[in-house]
Image 1: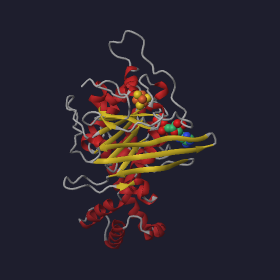
Image 2: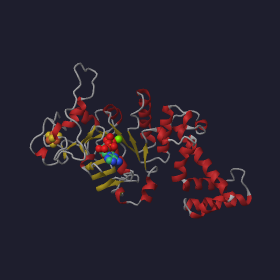
Image 3: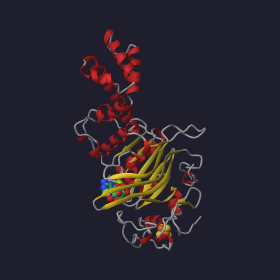
Length: 410
Ligand SMILES: Nc1ncnc2c1ncn2[C@@H]1O[C@H](COP(=O)(O)OP(=O)(O)O)[C@@H](O)[C@H]1O
Ligand code: SF4
Ligand SMILES: [Mg+2]
């Protein structure tokens, strides 16, 4: 088990991310480059981190440091001119058994068909901009139902077959018999060619309608669980009839439809006003207990991290430079960049000017050699300019990539 999973931070009553935790994801030495006309953008420079099962893991860092590229690698969505040039992304899709190691799969070595099966099912993502994620000409219900219709046809077919067997509904005689055969086929193979070939046959349309009805009923039930009142009515609305906060909830519902084991929120609340942001973060926290196993929360906002996360990784210019449980990171930051980032956040008792971080974020086409933070670092010494610092354990579950870390305050 990777050492960065170890940790003990029970002071603030958060979930323990201790050494017994199973990983849900392990990134090992992930390298992603973009081959542009201006040169090669070295976006991820050997990112390694472990997300333990059952926690909210925050990934923070200034704009352009590689947070979204990391997420896109995970979802199999790095596109031209980008290329994953090295590393592993081991995902553990099953529930941890407790006895023996859980089987992991390297997402970077799976065919697209596998990634399609797990995207939106085992791993799903809340998109930042609901207006871009929602289709304006489909009802809310149809859009939430799409996940069920893509990933849960087998389960729904079995349920419809059971309902038909129990004599439910008005369907009788030969039609009922045909519907039961179709349910049997789709329960065995939801994407069977025969089901697609027979698409124009009226009885098949009837079967599809039943499937859609079941998916819509599941969608309404899910919206109800997300605290949306009158969900039966909301599923018939179009996105333009919804408030901003409501659209966000619908996008969350779409991501949660199949109860993913890993939910990724990439700056999902960044454009919201503070009240709605607080509501959505509260909703996510509540859902963590019931609907999802683990959350990967990407943000540049340390306040959101402090409020929501159990453990956090700090990124700088394509590297993870520090990982710790959240209380420990805020209390005892060891990497000079993390310390500078924390000093740049306004405090309640702030009287003087805010401290900004000297210098600018490096151009990733031609990043500084050695530690990429060295041109801005007050502690920089000889090795920093030449050799990249490896991550080292500097406390229980506290990992830092730095030659001259900030003093440990214990
Ligand atoms: N399609 C692309 N083409 C070229 N460079 C890209 C592309 N996508 C991302 N990058 C570069 O990768 C780096 C990391 O970007 P990103 O992961 O989006 O940062 P953020 O931390 O703000 O999410 C940036 O330097 C960005 O310019
Ligand atoms: S390795 Fe050197 S330059 Fe980099 S953060 Fe640590 S002290 Fe600063
Ligand atoms: Mg981003």
